[in-house]
Length: 128
Length: 111
Image (cartoon, rainbow over all chains, first blue to last red; front, side):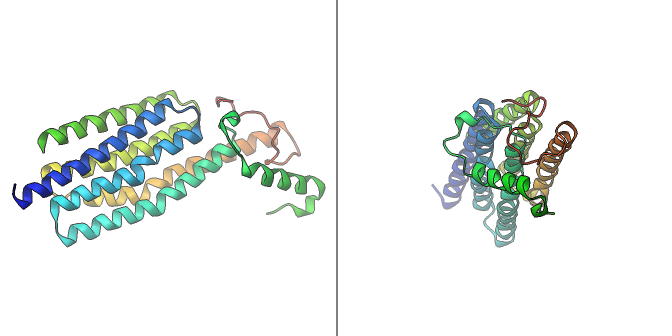
């Protein structure tokens, strides 16, 4: 095999791994019981799957102009995906779309209890 | 090479189909948003796979912009869902804090 064929093979293997991660996320979205566990599944193609696909594009093109743009795509995805996940997770917790019996521990509950207690006992402490 | 790309395409299609089923079934707006987010990441991956298959980079700017602005939708829907819950709380349960753990479920959500 020539060098080009090896690069092509590596690119297609990366494509396959990325596609498998996407499929895993799809199955997880369908099968998992509540919004928080579905979020766990949905993050697979956002970072790992995208990383493998971009690696495949880089292996296919092999020039710095493309690779630098691929790096930017990955950078922006890594900056913005956690923001979205944080906001969705916060909204899920606040609107109680989670199944509490599935949780092993809930460290946020103590903090919320304390905050509610502070608000109830002294309205002047109300943050805003 | 070709056969592997076809297999990958089929896997992407099944993943996107599952995400659409989850958007359809819900049950809450947040589940739908999580599925929509995952559908968008799958779309970025499909753009990349198509670039590998046809050996070009014309859709790379599209992937870049999607990666930059995909989170805006999730953030605004999350803010909307939280605010809706707060408004409902103030209407039905005057005077209690929005952090009070004894509140009713938002309509349409699972327990």
